[in-house]
Amino acid sequence: MTVSHILNGLESVDLTGADAAQAARMGFLEWAFCARGGGTPEAARAALTSPEALSARSDAALVFVDYLRNATRCMSQPVRRRSRPVH
Image (cartoon, rainbow, N blue to C red):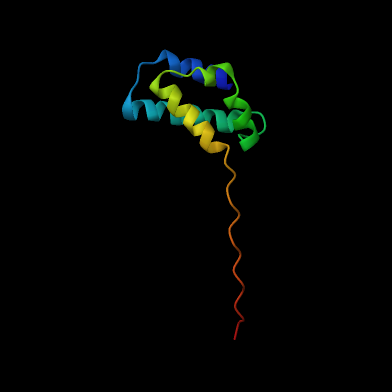
C-alpha cells in the first residue's frame, strides 16, 4: 500500500488514544514491508512530503506521520569492542 492509501484509511476512522496508536502502527508496518525501497530512511523522507502526510488531521494519521519521522533517522552502528586474547 502507498502512504496516501494508508493515510486516507487512517483519516477515515475515528480512533483516539491506544486504538489510534495501534491502527497507526499497523499502517506503518504495512508501509515498511510493502514500500518500494524497503521502508528506508529515504523512502520515509519522501513519504513525509506527500500531500496526505502534510495535511494529516486524525489522531491515527498523526501518529503514523510520527512513525514516518522516526523512520527517517539512521540507526547508529554498534561500536565494536576489541577482542580479548584467548588463553
